[in-house]
Image 1 (tube, rainbow, N blue to C red):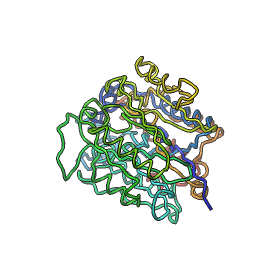
Image 2: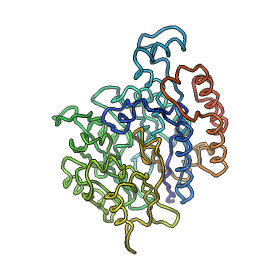
Image 3: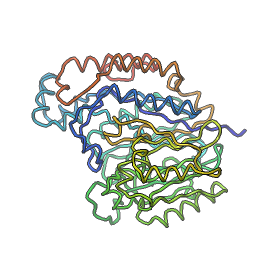
Image 4: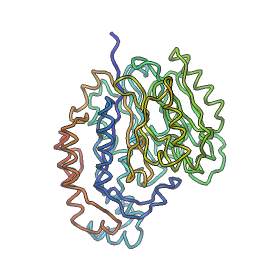
Length: 447
């Protein structure tokens, strides 16, 4: 029997410590808003509204709860001592960026959480899951083990879901998760073709760049092996050094794909023509149909990073047509807006519609619509194994909206971390969230 598969967007719910730490080198939006006042309540509500819009189009939508912050063990590792409050006060005075890392809510960008391979793609017929080690940035490297534990709660049937540990925490296997991966597929019921994008080779030569080349070829290759993907269905591509230095820290800032559609900027890859040729060949040989690959050169790398157009989500709505879900920054950029209009123009247009969303709070921290979600393809049996309350519904939206308004602060700055009441507020909020999502105790303070 052929099982029916469906793609779900598991969005990271924005955590109550959402703030602008400017911790991600090479992410221009993040660095540019360093230590400015953030608005956690607004950020969480904007994220929930995105989920509501996609679910309303008939897109599979689910939720990942935030990780618990602050990680005050980071301060103790760094030599701070005394009570929690004493460590926070001293760290704020001596090294505010380290304190920011301890409070970071970066787990909201679940595109970096892990790599997934559907059971219809892997040779052993299991869903494969590898949490990203995220060693390129201190604040994100703290997430790996927590994410691994969380994903085992979300995907708990170990007969269906094969959980791999994060790759070794070494520069050779630097892994940034699904933000550097695109799965393309000709049929919802069939196995897909996979594009893995890397910035450098640990065992090879690399061009010099101003900003970090975060993902390694060795990490991509290891995940393809671990997930038992057929060699003929996998393509590896190097990021363009020029793109990295323009602020393209992940591939999902410069190319995107869904189904049989692949959109990429002309300067996305070191050898763009070869990449597209190899991807087209792999797609045609494995999917038995043509890939619709569209090169975009009407706007610059600077426009790409400013607008985050390629960080849009391409989704299939309930009538089978494709829709682009883009940040409002793409609408505000004249050149990008014109390209989008061309994609949706005409009866034979590849895109049926575009929806622009306000995600300013996430965008100012360096993450757009696609950063906030990780794509997971599940069949009916696998879907039934996931805790049901994690799947989006209007009643859940209403309950989470009320929860955010009750527990999240309207604004937050680094100096607010000194407020003893904040730690109590965070634990109260997250404890209530686990009750709403019916997950049981998942945070260390609950055990």
